[in-house]
Image (cartoon, rainbow, N blue to C red):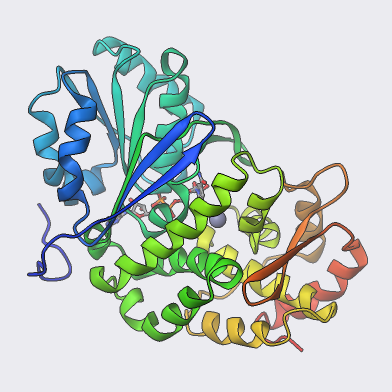
Length: 379
Ligand SMILES: NC(=O)c1ccc[n+]([C@@H]2O[C@H](COP(=O)([O-])OP(=O)(O)OC[C@H]3O[C@@H](n4cnc5c(N)ncnc54)[C@H](O)[C@@H]3O)[C@@H](O)[C@H]2O)c1
Ligand SMILES: [Zn+2]
């Protein structure tokens, strides 16, 4: 086992219990510093004596796998399935190999799957569980901040196709999600920053108190402090749960979570999915959406506040190769674009967003050059 970056805390483990109700049942959720320990009994009960598959990566398993050992005592078979880390694992070929291994190991309709890793492991695992024998139950044990605050909740699962992220997938909600912020102690600062961008997204539009907390605690949050992260993950989870419960399949309300994602997805694609992390692209995407908002006289107070906060993130610069035309074409192709055109989520003011469909190509074009030249300079 590698040594954790931070010394082991003396504080006792604690977990806030939440739940997400969805059309097919509910997801039981544990969030907190050390939340894994108090969730293990319930997880063991859910697994029972069935076959258990754990989907993870060599890095995460090496760092934290020991924490799950007690789950293996009763299960009929335990198969640890390791996949490559990052986006490369969200692939149909990989999913096929996993299904083959699960069948060979005696997987049945009542088998259980645990995902133990970041959002890519979670998205792949949810997809693999959702299709295996027409759907088996699974639980998410997210190990990145981004996965704890966003990807593990809400039932969206997917794999990628060449040049098209998340384009094959299904809604399949986990039975349980455990967000233990102690697992984040080993997470690189860049990954914490990427996750915090999604927190800022939700805080700005859904939870003003959370925004103040992030502004106040940014330094310790970026250092991976488990105690400081616990309330931030819990508040983000609450915000996401509320939106997903209201709109489980993204007909309307859930679209608010796409703040920063229209330009964010375009930036990710234009940068070849490697130069920018998803959360970093979303941070820049929020800056672009704020420009569009200001051009409509929205977010007068919120815009400078978010610009200041994101300025403290120390984001990597935008890749110099990004082209205006390419970005505009990618925005038009975003999978969230509907028949009626691209739906932009713009902040109106703190705690309030509007979804607008009438941003013209000209409106976007006017803002792109100044955005690329100086993304933090708004007005
Ligand atoms: N389903 C959804 O609703 C949803 C929402 C947002 C994002 N996503 C998806 O999530 C994915 C991104 O997830 P991510 O940001 O977690 O990236 P990731 O899963 O690629 O993980 C990022 C890196 O962190 C490492 N890592 C993970 N846990 C660690 C730990 N505890 N300590 C040290 N290193 C660790 C991983 O090995 C990897 O190198 C994307 O594929 C995105 O599409 C899905
Ligand atoms: Zn996102």
